[in-house]
Every structure is written in C-alpha cells, then in structure tokens.
Length: 81
Image (cartoon, rainbow, N blue to C red; front, top):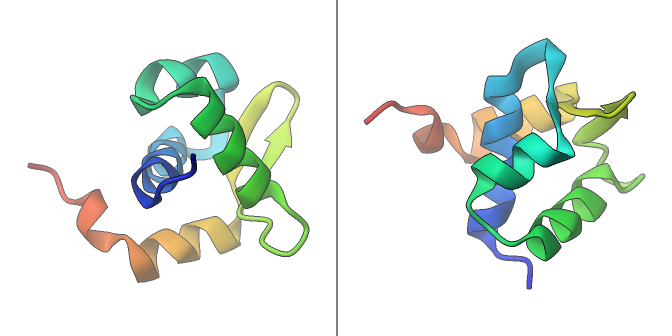
C-alpha cells in the first residue's frame, strides 16, 4: 500500500543523495518501509506524467520536478531535528 509517508521518505532520501543518487538496495535499507512500498513509490514517481525520479545506470535520482515537489510540498521534511 502506497502511503504519503513512504512517498515522502523516498523523495527526501533522494534529495539528500544529490547528483550521485542511491541504488535500490540503499533506498530499501534507509527508507524504513517495505520493499513493496518502495516499488510502488518508484512506479508513481517515474511515471511519464510525473517524472520526479530517473534512473541512471543502477542509481535513482531526483529530476528538477522532484526537487520542486520537495521544496513546495515537503519543506518541513528537510529540517534537521
């Protein structure tokens, strides 16, 4: 089941991964959600109508649209606690 929280976790992880991105294994390790949820998030974020993430080789990284999504809708997730 795709939740807003798992979607936000993956986006924020990829934000902090920067230009180099993360592998699927790294995202599964750090996201703290099920592998099935990560798969659903990837399918949604990589869909042609959203294109918020892309794959380069075996790594996933944010597109400009993904970075914009974080800035506009998830700025509180970027604050350090």
